[in-house]
Length: 174
Image 1: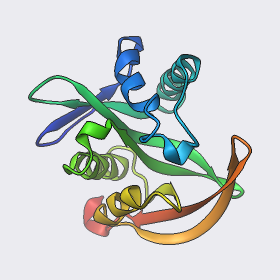
Image 2 (image 1 turned 135 degrees about the vertical axis):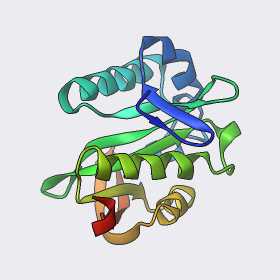
Image 3 (image 1 turned 60 degrees about the vertical axis):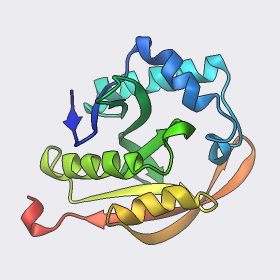
């Protein structure tokens, strides 16, 4: 276990989580910000990328496990992401649609922010969110972040404007 909250714990993803990831990444509605659902090969590539991130950085997107049921209900964690001409530490989150609007993403994202500041010693962390993804923007705001710029990324042949939400570590969070 990496992080624990009131209702959740976060741990590294592994190959046994493939089917749980499929429930998220193969759902058309969940993946609208990515221009559509993934196929099995793309889900496997996504999982492999997280495992490589753990090896390279010591962190990545983690499995979000519901404490009461033991079910993997989403993924949330920290990744290094391109932003203009640099790389930034980002909190990312994706959950099964059945668990939307219940505070799980905010709960997990807040725990990741605390981890970034307390464990990694980061001075700043962000969430880079597609401009049409208002639900994820609300999670970032509830996580204490404010909009700090826009940038258009190109993905699957589509220009996608993104907003970077940022929060800086307070002196008491050292």
